[in-house]
Image (cartoon, rainbow, N blue to C red):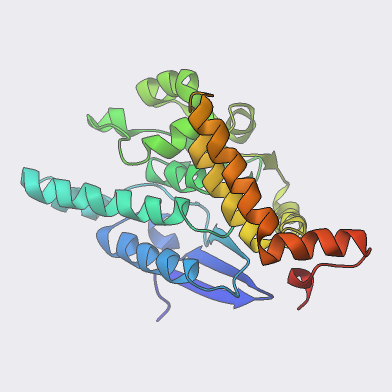
Length: 261
């Protein structure tokens, strides 16, 4: 019997596929734990250069599983806190992966599903995809996913979509910054492959450092401490083996060693 999460690795790219199509890939505590373990394990694999997050079935992810919601309705404050921390930990593990992450959104993403998309570095969606931050309709709020969603769409758009729980289409998702590009269904995988090819040109240490840099400078005051921090980061890469190899490859008009199979 296939698991809730399918993982494969080929050509230094890991593919993580949500595999609960019968419930629209909705979250429950088991799926959250499985995803956390997968993201944590892949983050430590030096031979994995990029991670694709995809889903089987009609939906990318419908958010919280109804049966899980029924169980949590009877939880105490402490049990609810532990449950919320579990979801937050899974999203943190995805967001902090050193490898570039790419979401291929083939269908609707609601609630926590939007959080998964926002926590990935790059997102491609089919035009038919739909999105909703639907938590307020249940008397809840999108707390665990909010750091990633607000970082993607900004506070102004969050003020609308967190409060109205409106359903919006893929074109709007791209306009507000949740997804980067749209691709027809038959072009979703080729578009993803083209992005992965572009990612393969970059140095893995430089990409991991770039992700850390973005997290450091986003929203930070441009003061002397930030300027010194950025100078220190580039100096470290220039002096490192990967930086020296990249510059040497450029000057010698050859491919850098990280492009070798």
